[in-house]
Length: 136
Image 1: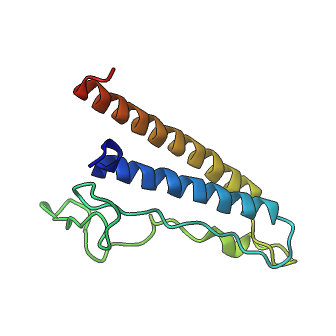
Image 2: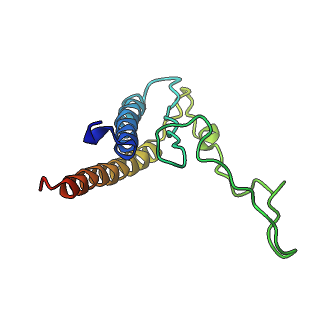
């Protein structure tokens, strides 16, 4: 097994590839900001299992919320007032285009920062492994 075949490094590579693809999708959204009836798209973030063994069908697992006091906020059946709302509904222009350049640019910059963090973690992990085997 090669050093780059380790599950942690594989998960980081998958995450970097996802950020690269998301950057492409966001760039398409920005380039089509004046195209009539264009709807912006985004990618679903990959889920990893608890062991870091790569994408998993079930996601990260779930923890149920437990109400330990009557003064705590109720977990089940709580109001959805704190969930993010679909802002595209009122941002659609008369031509049918619903791309918000401000939102897309915020997503692009967040994506760039996340990619930089993941690639830094990947290179540091490789450096630690090289140090551990005495190749530094």
